[in-house]
Length: 88
Image (cartoon, rainbow, N blue to C red; front, top):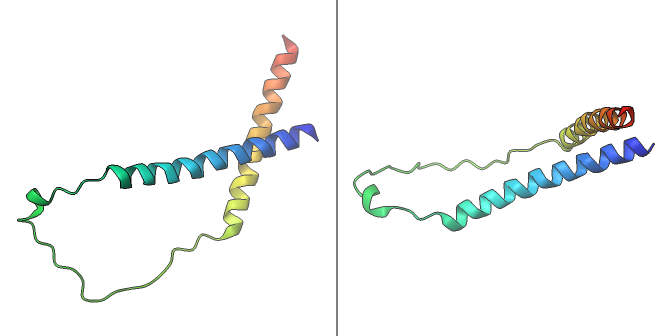
């Protein structure tokens, strides 16, 4: 049971690091971005005259599958790490 809890904690940590890294990179790219208006002045791009509204929906059960999959992978790694540590 201890292995299952450790694997779930490892999976949670990996997911938190991934989401925080994604948010952090987006934040940094937004803060650092400086448009180069002088070189883009000659390249005119016409905008669309119609607007489409929509949302990309990621089903919540997909996160459950990635959490479960990562917990299984973490559990296998922890199991073999502990097994190799006890042999030495």
